[in-house]
Figure (cartoon, rainbow, N blue to C red):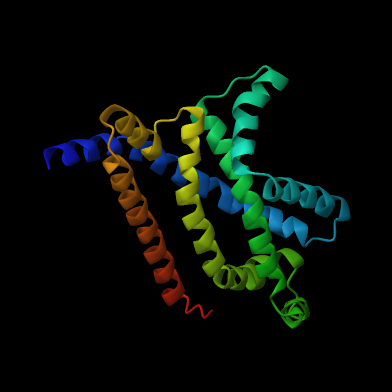
Length: 214
């Protein structure tokens, strides 16, 4: 029992890395995805094409490859080195920003065109229509897919172990190597499940608050 407690304490040291990466990625990718989604539904064809290429690249290539490219490839190409955390944050923000761009875009495009016409008839500008009428409704509609991405992010944070970050998975792997037991992996799995469960509960609260119906 004491061994399990000691293992848990050691593994929890990696939780701070996982939480920091998760929180900072969420803070950055949410506004990024929303702004890019607005750009994708704009009348600016050039902007739509650029954003289309961005989402195509980041949704169509493996996250791990993107992480390696940022951490190992960019320093070679630019001569600028990044810490593992900064490299991971840049990669995760751009990757999840691409997915959220498409989620927000679909939410915006799901709003009936009649609401645009009614807003314009009331004298609202395009900017006012988007910020007051369209986007609030779109955000309510995309809560379920946002929940899926939030859960995926919990699991994807484990990939940073590949570039030497001391997250939950790396901490458990070190214990498995040292103790020759799978108990650390079981403890880590339980911690990820608890983390994911809190995320699910949070989004269920949002769905109930805004009366989201699937």
